[in-house]
Every structure is written in structure tokens, then in C-alpha cells.
Image (tube, rainbow, N blue to C red):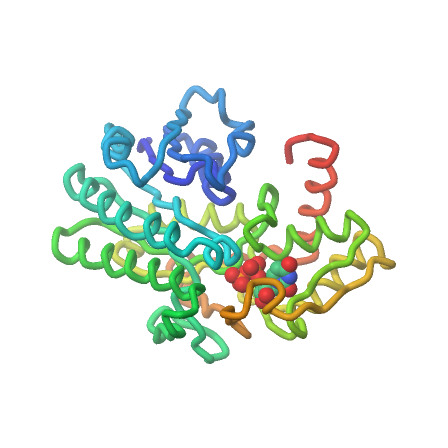
Length: 327
Ligand code: UDP
């Protein structure tokens, strides 16, 4: 079984991917600087005999050199994530997301490793189409609005990966994640579901930004991580870009109502302007829905866990966490 390196392995998606790769019989090395990831996320696998944790940053080329040694596949998930973090620290976003990817791609060319690049639906920017396919245009806003630094930096990563594939024959797969959710996701960096759930569990108010008419599709992290693993095994996926997510949209207002209905119907819902949440230079994306036809035709399936079931699982896990148990 291949030995896999997962950068960002202690993060929300990374830790679930490590678990799935281990369940599949792989040897797994996780590299993480524990800036947004936490050791706690690895509690289930820390003592596994095929698992190794390296504490270090992808911005350190020496560390990257060490991390790729003896590895057959690289899953590059480490990045600056979350709308809140990106709005607050664009320098960190750009530095974490661009140069380290280039270094890793170079190492992968030297070492002959297969490479998964975790990208994001943010690369579509504010494209106003109802549903985005992989060949759609990337439409970013002005550079004075820091939000676009994130999508732009990941788009550069995609260009780099595709260029390395073309020029050096590097075997790559690119996955654009759309709103991935599930146990272990935290609300500190802006992610809406853990924020709503924690707010509701504290008695509210649940804070919806703007009018709540903006729409998103939420996919369960284990389904997403399994798809990533399977794409890396599928020869037809080599060199390709995939949207990965649910294609069932829900408005943020309806999401808030669904969370409140599950936790406590008396919890109030407040509507807050974006300027108060993220500052004056913030721009949101009104509707974000992937076309996942390409994923379906390659793997014969798509993420399909219903949101109700996802919310139940997250609420249970947040309740357990407040009782200090691992989800
Ligand atoms: N959102 C909200 N309240 C929050 C956090 C987010 O209403 O406390 C909204 C946010 O404005 C966005 C949606 O929920 O329209 C999803 O936000 P998230 O940051 O989770 O993901 P993204 O914006 O990257 O899709």
C-alpha cells in the first residue's frame, strides 16, 4: 500500500483524510504546524502503527524535504483557510498558499509522487452562474478587497499544478472543495455551521449575515475525504480538475432555522450586516452551487448525505465536545 503524506493533516479535512487512508491500509505521514489544525483532531489515530505526525510548517523547505522522503503520494491540504482568517491576514494567506505549493510540486517531480491539490470553490470568485462547472470563468473582485486573495492564491496553485503536469509529466488531481462540514470543524475562522450550532447551544442569538438569502451546499467531510482518496486511485482522474461537494443548495436563513429547530426553538435569530461581521471591504458570494457531473461520471457517485443527517451529527458532536469527549 502506498505511503501518503497529508499536509494539513491535523486540520479538519486533513485529519478525516488521514483516518480514511489508514482504514484503507495506507501508511500515513501528517505534516501540520498546528496553526489552525489541532493535535486533538488526531486523537483517534495518533498511536496507529502506520501513522506518523510531523510538527512543522509547509513554509519551511527543509521540513518539506524531510516530509516527502519515502512517500508515494502527496495530498496537499495545508493552506490558510476560512473567510475570517483570510480577511484578517491576507499576507499569511498569500505566503502560505503559493510558494509552499510550488516547492512541494518541485519535490514531487523529483520524487515521482502522485499529487492531490486541495483547491476551493473560491476560485470561481463571484461568477453569477447558477451552477459552476470546472471550465467556467474565474471572476474575482478588486484587489482592494482581501477576500479575493484566497481564491486567487488557490487559482495560482491550480495553474502551477497543471503546468507541472504538462511540463514534467507530474501525475496530479485537483479537487475544488465546496463547503465541507462535519465533526471537528470549528467556527473560529468563519465557518457557518459550527458557528450556528455553538451559538444555538449557548442559547443564541444565531447570527445570520445580511438577509440570509445567500445559498450554499454542504457536504459531509467523510464523503469528501473518501472521494479524494478514490480520485487518486482512478486513472481517468489524472491531470483533471473536479468540483467536490454537495449540489443541494440551502439558504443561510433556512440553515439557521434548521439548526434552531433542532437545538431549541426559542433561540432567536439575528440578522447582521456584513460590515459588522467582516469590515467594510467585504464582499460575499450570493450563490455557490457546483455542477458535479464530472465527478459523477468519473467515480459513479457524488456526496449525498442529507443536510438533516449532517446537522444531527454535528450537533451531537458539539454537545459531546462541551462534555470534553472526542467526536
Ligand atoms: N455566515 C453567517 N453567519 C456566520 C458565518 C457565516 O450568516 O456566523 C454566512 C456567510 O456570510 C456566508 C455563508 O454563511 O454567506 C457561508 O459562510 P462560510 O464562511 O461558512 O463559507 P463560505 O462563505 O466560504 O461559503
